[in-house]
Each structure stands twice: as structure tokens, then as C-alpha cells.
Image (cartoon, rainbow, N blue to C red; front, side, top):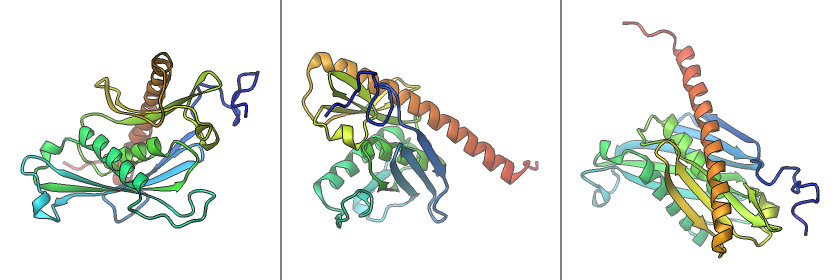
Length: 244
């Protein structure tokens, strides 16, 4: 299959270095302390945050920091395959760990000792890039919950097909068998939080793919920052002026 046409267009009409359309929404679950949806193209993810609250199992309590619990799942209707998906399969466990590790590097855990933060992430619709969309949704839910962080975290992936580096692959491109590099960063701190590869990749190819993924992260971070600011401004208007 030809993934990039002679005119330089991908299967969905994008250029190789073009992101899919981004969309997000805050406060989608009334009972959660923070919640958000994040969409990258046709991939849609819901994240909910509860806490910080008292640690449920005292044996897991950390005197000097908060504990992050993360659960990832895919809805049975998220793909064309209408099959039951368990919570304990290998991929779910792996992605739960990846998301938790990213959040632990982002949240100021030391400010909330002996407490627990629960993060639930569910893929509602999958069309490639679910790993990065989950990280972005979780970050927005954490921010909506008012939990202090070191920096905004943003994630994006890039791959290599038809001898070209391509940004933010959809499912068809992701199924092409080429290498896929997922990256998450703290843009203001200039720090890489996640670097995850599904396949082997040559060193010379890796540099270009990683650089493209990093550019994608910065673009996603800019979008998330704009949406968070707009959300805070809407809340301020709804609450009205503060009386002294």
C-alpha cells in the first residue's frame, strides 16, 4: 500500500508533518474531581481523576509523597472489533504503567504526602495514537482537578513509512508495520518524560522521527495550554467577581 501519494499527501489528506485535528472538553463527569475528553482525529479518550484523598490501603501509603493509581481500559465499542476487553490484559497493564509513570514525573507529589490520586482513562474510540491521547487526556483531567504539577505534559507520536517520517499516525498508518516512536515532554522544562518505541529503528532514522514527534508534542502543548486558559476564564466569568 502507498501511504504517501506522489503529491505528498497521506491517506487522510494530511501532509507528512501535519497533526490530526485536536479537540478537548473539560468537566464531563460531575462526580469526578477532574475530568476531560481529548480527541486526536477520530481517536477519543475520556479521563477522570479522583483525589487527592486518604490512601485506601495503608501499606501503600508514602509518608513523603502522594501515591498515583492509574487504570487504563478500552471500551468494547472503541474499534470495529466488537469483542469484550478485559482490564487485566497485557496491553492494558502496560499502558496503565506508562500513564502512571508520566504522571508521577509531572505531579508535585511531595506536596500531598500520605494521600492517593486515582486516574481512570478509557478509550472511547480508537484510530491510532491512543497511547498519546490517553496521556493528554489524563493531563487535562489532572489540571481540571487543580492538582499542582511541575509543568504541562503533552504527548505525540511519529512513525516512518514510505521512506518518510510522518507525524501522528492513524490506525491505517500504524498498521503499516513501520517503527513508531511515542514521546511525552514538559515543554517549559525542556524535559523528555516518555520515549517509547514499538519496533526497532535505525539510528539515523530515529533522530528524524524523534525530532518530529517532539515538534508534535510542542504543538499539542500549545493547544492544551490555550484550552486550559479558556476553561479557567469561563469558570471565572461563571463565578463572577470576587468579593473582599
